[in-house]
Image: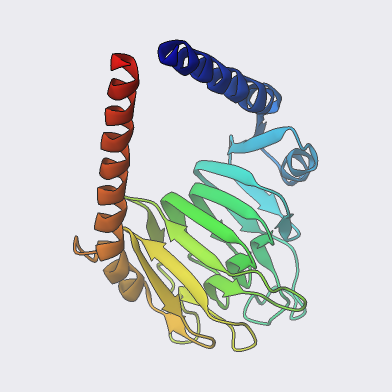
Length: 245
């Protein structure tokens, strides 16, 4: 009887997974883009979960991301070619980012974001970086981790294993990463280590890279691995006991 109950439970679990997961897999699609309008149209299409750049793209406006999305730049460049309050001077603040991720989640991979006041604004969101993300050539710096008006969500930047932020134009007045003074603290995560960046704090590229390369001694990561091993062993023992019954 116990064996039959176990088999029925497995069948029910598989059916539940099929019903809940398959519609998502069927509806998801990839949009290959080669222009500013392509990008905006892909974001409007809620069935699109992955945007792939087929070429370099010029944009005359900030691209706003307000829903979960995966962006694969394939090594291409997004460049802002519009105007600023100071004409063509990107060091005159006009709130121009190449990408603004607003109160959602996004993954950004292998892309260069250049020509704006800043490359990327993580605005009350969780953004994951993969591959090489180049934020060189922006007037005020690379990546801003900020909340802004009426945003209460935690700001978090996560770097997967092997992810690299590039900034060849970093300076004292144009840092690679910063939290504005009117925002609450933000989080940056790499290699299982989570660090807090305080309001008004700026990070140089070497400081970010030091965090990424920070070894091996992260207690939270080891704890996570140990707990997973214990969980797997416990499940295995339960299955064996049920089969014997």
